[in-house]
Image 1: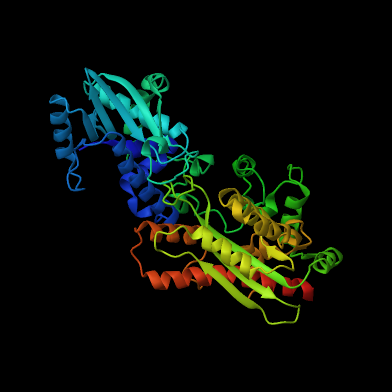
Image 2: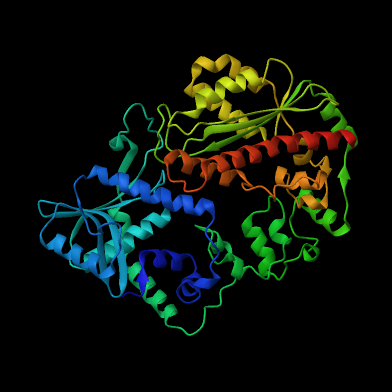
Length: 490
């Protein structure tokens, strides 16, 4: 077998403790989030699509069944017979294993290609490729060049998908040649760690989330209280660890001379003294300016690395759902309207626009929570569907942000823990309302779920999940209704 793989090498580069735990204490791993699972599925899909740039290649992995010894043997045979295109060419050198996405041969030149489902070449991608180059060249293959294939986020799909326009190929040979000595040293260091009888002692730090959230965070951070210095709002991570490394972890221990802004000190004071901030005059002025009927609006969007709709780009935020509650007067019963995109391969945006225009009427303020998101999505819809510019612009001009009283700290309670997110504000103001009992509890899960459904990779109950999406989005706008009611009472 092997001591290190490409993935464990990258993991070790982030944190050698994570490397050790991953080898000997896999039981301490946190379960992958839906977002992480979606990212892995996306990477696999993009990698398979990129093979179309070099069609009819020889795949060392047959029937999607990975056999370590067999792929090495298949790779060796394919190289010795000078097959022009090899998928998943695999190499083992000094007990380090790696598989390359695409290896090509043309007139005595071997060229390597690694595919990334991102829109730029990241530092981790360079390191990944440098390791691949190290393994391939030390296995006796002289590489003429090494390319990263990544996604062109300027590509707009119109008609059949054009993978030659979707992907960008960029040589990184110069960058990875400079790293070869470093790669060899890192391998020695990482293999030495794996031979130890005890886990390395590594304190929590910036590496826990950089470049990726570590799957052992729950284990390594178990000593950190649920509410600590790491929850101080808008404080840079480097400053949080400056406190932590000086022995400060609880809010009560933050030194009085530590450079925090007024809002951050206010958060600490409110928590320690159980103080509630209510600026009634400012809240009253905010409410008095609202024009009825009031519309409470929330969008959900999703992203696709590979666009499936015409007039869309890779990783574009595509709206697929909204919830709308309407109040004709302060004392009236709210009415609810909703939209959820169909799962029939049709672009949800046109019907989204048409129903939104109808449901929003012509008068009254439209309240959203965090205006930047909805306003940006609406402006993008104008760009992509200019025929709806006039009615969408009128909707934009009616938007008002319900987040303002909380963002500006006109209302603040310790339960909000420094955050003005609706997920923190709702239980603080209206504790009888909660997202806890919903099957879908946040926007990331909603987005990934709908994305999986439209791409045909979802394996759950479609109808039940559609209902769960509707219930989640509905609670977002009902929450705004209840928050405004509470502010009015205050």
